[in-house]
Each structure stands twice: as C-alpha cells, then as structure tokens.
Image (tube, rainbow, N blue to C red; front, side, top):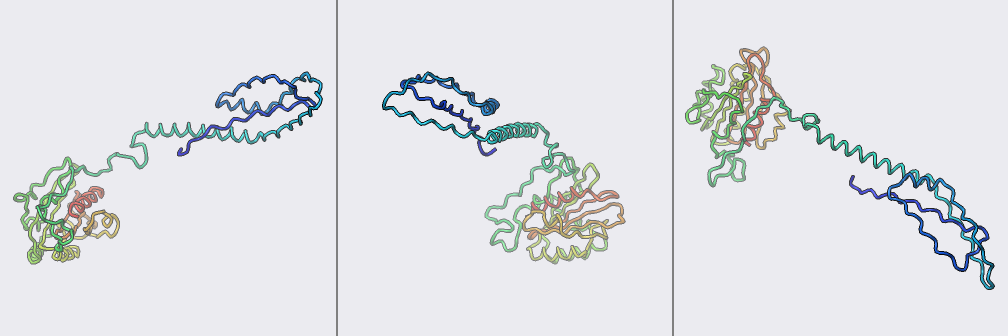
Length: 330
C-alpha cells in the first residue's frame, strides 16, 4: 500500500470519580503509577471498556479546617461509545487480513512460471527465429533513404544487406544465390507466369531497374520462402512499377488467381515510409498454395513469396517475414 498505516490509538482509562461528599485530604499520598498496556494488545482494550469503573474504598476524612472551602466534585466524563472502539478493531483486523492476502499473492506470482500467467506467455507461437537484424551502414556522407534532402528516396546501403537473412534451421535456396549476391533479371522473371515474363522484363528496363538482390530458403515444415529486392533509379519509377504489379499485370507463378487482403495487419506493420499489398491464392490450389506481398520503400520494391505444398503456408510466419522485411527497408 502506498500509505503507511498508523497503529490504532489505545483508549484511555476513565478517570475515577471522587466519592460523593468526600473532601480532599490536606496531604494526599502520592498515587502509584498505573501499569501501561502493551502495544497492539487490542483484545484487552475491549475488555477495559466493558468493565464498570471500580469505586475506591472510602478514605479517612479529616475534619474540615476553618477557612477551607470544599473542592468541587469532579463530574465523571461521559463514557465513549463502544461502537467506535469496535470499528477500530474491525478495520485493524481487515488491514491485517489484506496484508496477508497481498503477501501471499505476490509470493504466488513470483513463484509461477511465465507460461502460466496470461500476457507473459513465452511459449512458441510458430514464428521463426531470425539472427539479430540490423540495417547496414551507409557510405560515408550518404543520407538515409527518407532523410531530408534525399528527394529520390534512394537506399545508398548495400542492397544485398537489405534482404532478410535465413531463419534458424532453414536450408538456403541455391537458385537465388546469383553472382556475388546479385540476381540476373531473367531469374527474377522466373517467379512469374511464363506468358507475362517478356512484357514485364521490358517494363522493368524502361522504368529504370538498376539492381536485384534475392535470398530464399526452405524450412523443415516444407514452407518455401523467396525474397526479391529491386532497386530503381528513383522512387518515382518505383511507384509506377508497384502500381502495375499490384494490378496483376503479372502474377507470380503457381498463383494465377489471388485475392488481395485490405486493411488489417498489413497496414499496421509499424514500418515507416513503406507500403504493402498482400495477396492470398484463391482456391482451388495447384501444386502449391501461395501467399505473396509487395513492399514499396523509396527506390526499392520487395517481393515476398511463401508457398506450401497443397496448403497455404502458416499465416504467422508470412506476416513475420513481411513485417521484418518492411522494417529493414523503412
């Protein structure tokens, strides 16, 4: 509790009244000190209020001396309401009980495992374990992609380091290794339906495609992931290509028909300066079931594709991959 509880004030003993008609003695003997009650002895306090005050034995009265006026009889004080004391006792007992309960609760919380407490569970929810992810350093004197003065929103960092690394336990996709990490345009076009590759390749060339970096892997559950990062001469060209790709100018292979997801987690990914369009293959599925997303971030477009055999890949790992890739580019 934030406030410190003060001990209850012990009740005072009622003053013993003088016997009616008794006169004070000329030389009164020194009264003996009354015994002090022990601190916290609350039951005895109630007993003291329940007993009637004891009348002292009649003292020997000396004859009144001439010229002395008898002292006025002391009026006995009104007895305190016993209900006040009982209320104090009840509140003191309640505070003690709550203190014990609070201590027991705190002990129970500290003794329980985190997985037993709602909101603190740390059990796996299916997400992958990635290594520490950090944005690559910028060349000396180069601004960040969304800094003031960088009107083209150019990513000056190494594009190959702007692609997510493999999660723990994944097998790398050798087909996306490229030469020194740079992927030929023809390999990127293989990700799309065959009849759309030629036109898409010409459009990428016309719209200022500069570089492609990629990485892929397969996890033990059979989920295949591919990430492509395309850098253009400026963000203006990126917006044009992004609009065409999301209008299904070319659909990823094995997903000729897909439904776009609007709102939800894709718009609340928490990655600044990025935009996402998320798609899920419509039934009936073919050899694989596909989820994919386009991420627009300045002069870079990223394509994230995940596929599972005869069933959609887990939503949780797809969302995790898209969000992390967005944050790396943002």
